[in-house]
Length: 246
Image 1 (cartoon, rainbow, N blue to C red):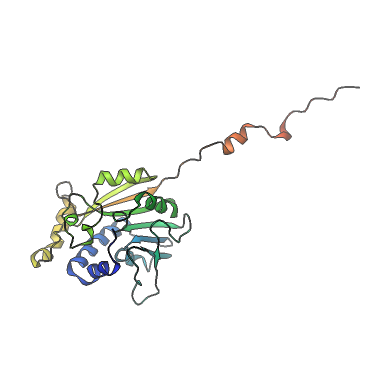
Image 2: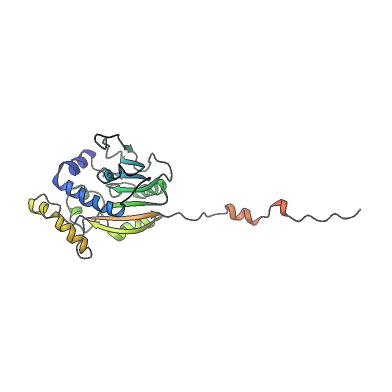
């Protein structure tokens, strides 16, 4: 079940809680991917809040938004880079993306396996993808006042196992959103403190959002193909019988 794009925009750009969540998640994304010069960076779901830092750095930025959710023009006041697309059929060439981020895409997709196959397809060999999903044990997945309260929450192991089954290699794991999903003034004022404490004691405190960076694994070709052909010697190299005298 996808949220409407208007609800997502209102949360991230027009609410205090949404702006705090945007800042916390984007900070971790920039820590993992500080540089994207000369690269193609794409996002799926509602990635706009996370892609803005790369607009002036990357060679190309594309925000893919699924049809059940809807699309909005983004970024404001600049040439539009957002595209409406089918969940499992993206208008990108195979191997065209260096970095791919998914937020509010995997947990709400009706065909997660097909979505992961499409994400694998558009990444270049060795390309990196960042999957951002609600944590099953976190407070944010229990509150329907935020977009992370919708869809299927994950544990870290569940997410990594699902990625491994679709030819992704989990490389790094991060948790964020340790602050409670509350609009009360006390929690908003102390939000930076909770994020700092959570990052320091992440083994004890559980974040509301899980982030897994994974690389694309390319398998060796199987089947007959070239190996069978090589086993058969070329005709021009076969020894010819010597001519017998008449």
